[in-house]
Image 1 (cartoon, rainbow, N blue to C red):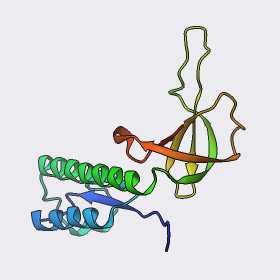
Image 2 (cartoon, rainbow, N blue to C red; image 1 turned 180 degrees about the vertical axis):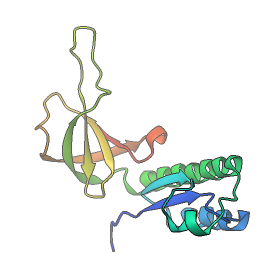
Image 3 (tube, helix red, strand yellow; image 1 turned 120 degrees about the horizontal axis):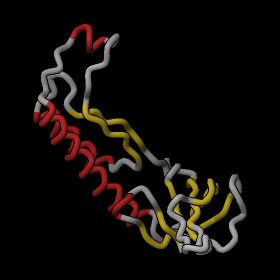
Image 4 (tube, rainbow, N blue to C red; image 1 turned 135 degrees about the vertical axis):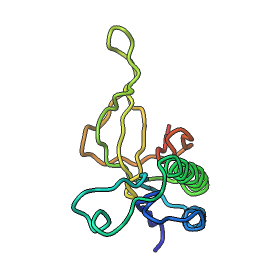
Length: 156
């Protein structure tokens, strides 16, 4: 499917997870290059099948290390993909509103920073002196990506 965005959930340190299985997860992430990911360390939840039938046998320090490795691979791969695929591409953006990070001076004036979502559900930041308002569609040319929030595309 052309231009499809892929997302997934990743749980690090599930009951019985081996280093080899963790390495397989990292390899999968390298290959697939997910556009979005929700990443967590496993924690036992009452009233679940795992709680009733499995032992939470992966130590917390290993869960945290594995989770950090998953996060690092995701950020690196999504940044690479965004630089290759998104920069120089026009995207239709649903305007969601002004961000909390808008640049304001002490008098409350300044350049508003707006945000929205592309049709791939990627967050995009942009500045406009006048924005059409929430719920409107705008088209933007992506000029670069931000390594610190690698799913965020920043057009001029």
